[in-house]
Image (tube, rainbow, N blue to C red):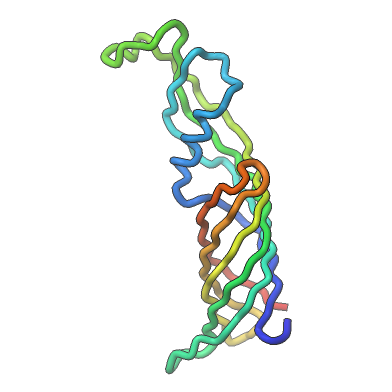
Length: 166
């Protein structure tokens, strides 16, 4: 666009900073297990995709001997779909003695849940325009605020990649 402005559409893999704590907390909120008590062992992201749309403002970074380097900031929205696999163990009758866990806990295996998030985000980053101005490399940081699923929950993200510039 004109005057250092750009409209960006990004599609890619997504994850949060501090993902282990985030999904540990979410595991504690799951209410569809049929066990009297269960114990979180870990989580991992099985699949993750995000679609972002940003309105960006670009400006040149004037560093002697370096051309094509810009910084940018902007705002926009994001839709994310993340499938998380939880590893857990469970017990049936009573809180087991911690010294005798092997006799009272049962492996729960893996349970997957899908997290769908919609929200607003702000972004700041660096972009290096290659000799062919249609292509550039970028590094950015985004602060994402969920509006759907967990309203007003903030998450930090970062990205690195290549762009095709129209």
